Image 1 (cartoon, rainbow, N blue to C red):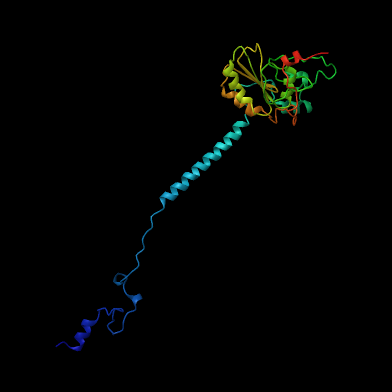
Image 2: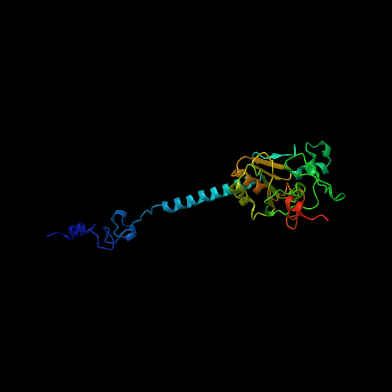
Length: 270
């Protein structure tokens, strides 16, 4: 039979379910139990990163930055005149700049390469029979007649008076002209589609023009052999009511002359 001492020795170190027993018979608290002896320990599961959401938000950010960049480019691009346009302002960028230079005394009208870009006299005010003369064909500015040609997206089927059309340019309109000997009926329809329903624009045939299409605003002109030339739309978008290139700001395009040269020739005179 084992002695009490031996029994106690064997019992020391056995768990009771509440903690280990010391040699003096006192139980150890659960917190004192070695970590590897604990039962029911909570296991921490490492959560995977939500790569799907991360990639989605990253893609959205890239797209947003792309759209912002595109918008900035469009704004910048529209601030630049289309390539290939001939302007007659010399060292100045537009009507606004040359007008400021004249006002500040930096240059005189006579010193300009093309003085007509700042000439805006109504030649028929004193002499109703006066006809303005132009060095450019079709004209893109200069002295003109007192009545403007209605330019609310009007497409005229016959030539119009230069002096009336130039007055429309002074109001900030764009005038699209074509040589009827070089542009057929379908071509005329294609050109007309660029003008119709576009305020501050007008279109008319210009016999003996020499090129299929010539488009002009005040002080600028672009000519092309291609009726589908994208520069025609760019010219319209840039110069219609361009604040820096409008010789007479806030002037209307409605209520002007709506007749052609042929109509005027048929009118009674007495």
